[in-house]
Length: 378
Image 1: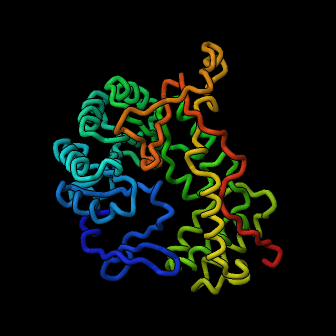
Image 2: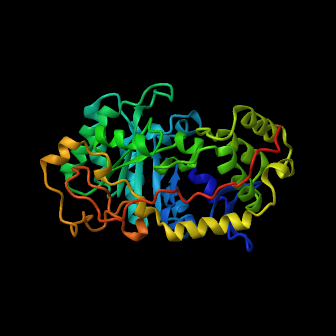
Image 3: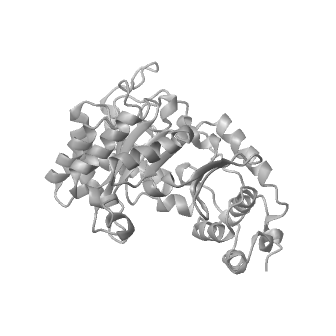
């Protein structure tokens, strides 16, 4: 979110749904819900320390962390000195992070997301300066500014960065971004890079349950109906809803290709939510939301974190005895990982010698299902 766009927004709360909207002149520029706050990191685009702080203060009551976007290569961002343009202006980049850290209360984390520079030595110099601003975590998109989605991410460069940050001794989590498709694939990425965590973008757009070891299949029945109900309940714009649903993909088990095609044709031609009545069934978006709240309360996200033991190779595991059950990795003071920052969650160790004593992940992802059969579709 661009800082200037937020400065002209007004905050409004829907008394029925609880949705918090920051409304611009003609539309909402940012919406959230209180249930998201413990896990919500607000990414900001900025090229001015003062504007960044103003925007951050505007939303700080509804978020748990501020992330500075230093990686967006799109012209709308770089032409104003934001995004990837900051990579070649480290003085400005670091001044923004420093200003944010000084202005935000301790419980609000400040993080940064960057791209690789063409030269590894230059990248390490930039990383050193960024880490010294007092950030809580650093995400590295393993592509350079000129690389695009079709170019494979060079994740092999990240291990040296991870080890470099670790040697700085500040307890900063390094998060990998680029070409990770889901939970199982994240194991590969963490083995290769040593990163504390993995950020997923396109994979999550295709299937929001990709973070689960058992992602949803047959998204036409397990996800789409529930999403339509929630979108209508929360008052989302129909065109935006159509765009998001069009991205959903997943393994088909019981849904045939013909059924999937018929469904997608129906909503692509629809002019409003009423076009999906037959597919969605009763519009019980409120009940869907209650189910989400219940699932989050019963299975907090921090209890489903990927522990190192789930992806270490057997040879490495056999070299060292397992740590005592009571041992847990402790994050140094004031360097909490932003997942979620307000619960003081430790970042996962990248040396894999110790791991947090969290319970094992549940076998089922807490994502509400659609529960609608496609038998009525042609």
